[in-house]
Image (cartoon, rainbow, N blue to C red; front, side, top):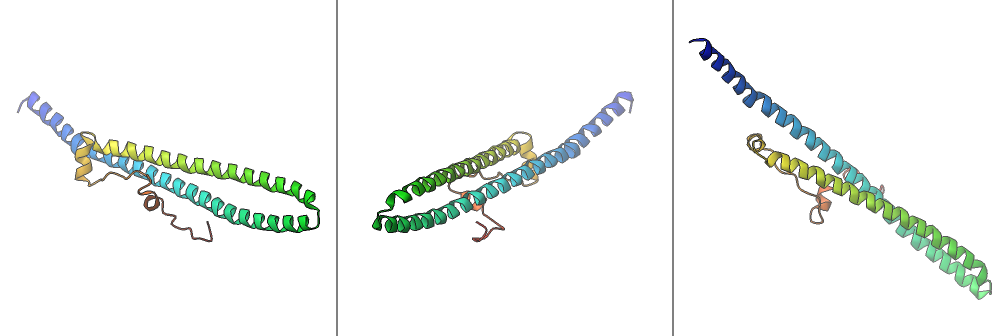
Length: 168
């Protein structure tokens, strides 16, 4: 074999190493990084969901208790013609609930933003593993598409593991 024969053999060997060793390793590392990002985003969605549900539950209980107490005090005050003293307290209760509703809306926005961020990461991952030539490696290593978070699979994909009803 002459000079050119050895040169082509070495170039071919380098190409085989790159195609069958370097590219798959790079692909697997990228896929693992993207899957870790997706898991972190799922965790952020779970935390946002837990905060949102916790505030909703506590707000509902507190609001009902406050209105019950307020109604009883108002009825007693009106029976003794002192209703005008209670009217100032009514306004304070109402304004505190308005503030609480703003907190709930903020938490709902955070929750929705976390879901949107998760879906963007899932889309990025799904596009990455389904484009050529990476689709070959994805099938070879049995990587599958991730599911988007939507109303159909929201509970399953953001299950509140590690939380119980006392926590939220």
